[in-house]
Length: 329
Image (cartoon, rainbow, N blue to C red):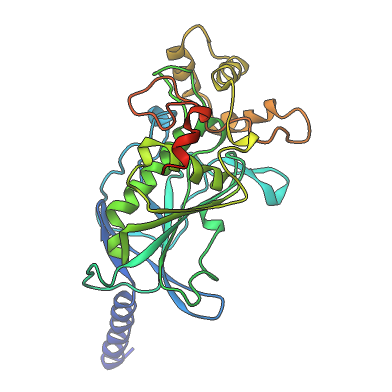
């Protein structure tokens, strides 16, 4: 190839790479820089999208069965064009086929604009969607903004949280307190409070919403002292904390049963947790079937429950005693 052609080709490639890079939306959050992409609303409106952003460290190995840990800063630029994995659980659209991984604490942010210099006057409202799935299935990426952001200006966020046994097991003491899946949601809301301004969102105008178990989650956040100050409005769709399936009983006994079923000693809580951390996550996740004797019913064998120990409790008091608090929120 003549030298002139090589030079022209070099500049064409350089221009393409430069133009492509300059067109990539980038923001900097507390843990590092992220690059996103674009999606389009139902009627073709262009939307900035940032998918698979980690809001907590992966709950794997020694972090399994622990409350969510802060996300570690990364070097370079995080690729936020690929959805993060779903948390381990059944896919309701494929006859309970199991999907997901333990490394699943990710959220997705969609925004119609990315102002360079945000002020209190131009920041947008924020809507956070908590997915349903009976506290054992589902994922945030399934609920996109294609209709919501067609003509509206607000920042939309969807989140993942640990499910089933991995998200809600407890030994009934401070070795494994309850409600880690709900504490994941709190960690996501705290991340949003800290970082949403770089996406054009107002951290002081956050609405949380959800359907089914997501609606029950929203209701629990209205009660929980851990969620105080993390949102301003709430919308519940087809669920509440008063639904019979949204509160789980005998979780410590169920956890002990699973440990025994998987060949773990059950004499004390330390042995239960240590042994369960050595078992495959997928095996633990699928064990909830043991508590569904009739056609996947009762369909929420693991979910929110009262915590009797722990440093920071998501749900430290009974639902009955919380009743008056809900209407004073």
